[in-house]
Length: 275
Image (tube, rainbow, N blue to C red; front, side, top):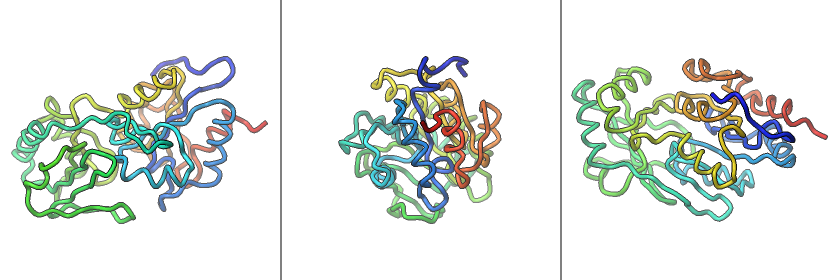
């Protein structure tokens, strides 16, 4: 991580926040205290960028509820979205031929996997195949039975689950046998993903920050899962939530309270005290 950041007037000019397990509480809402802390920081002159593994269709309702009008980095860095204009500025898709090859290599080691996939675009659907365990919540999922349906339109990413292997072990195997073909990350419980090779949250965040004239040295980042590690590496200062994965805590500059206990607000209130 970079050791310098901010400007003479602000401790950090850019605040990058993950959503799930970080800014969002378990009920998918943002607390009033967190809203107030972000509002105070932006009123002081800092910019806020949401950086999430969710693709745009799973994020829009949250951003609209927050009154969020700026840039958001979605799809693990593959999408830069202008919330105020409801417009995709950039979108990177997964090479489906390479993804198929990667899956074959992984299944040769693990046996059959349950699969889901996120289709590209503002209205891209999330498809879930037989045996894939969808987390409870309001996010829409379209079931599929025919494997050909998985490959019938451009994809942002593919989700993997195994009936016996844990998430960390599945991600380790996938990275070992296919990490030279696709990107592999673990973004939460039951969420192991295949991405375009080299794509991370840091990729999309650096593009969005550049549009604001900012860099990693200007940035404080908040997260909770291994997919946030590249973002912490890019930012000047990384803050892990209390419930974060041990791999992220190991590279964090600070561990704050949980997402249920306003961990982001606690840090921002210290850095951007109310006038």
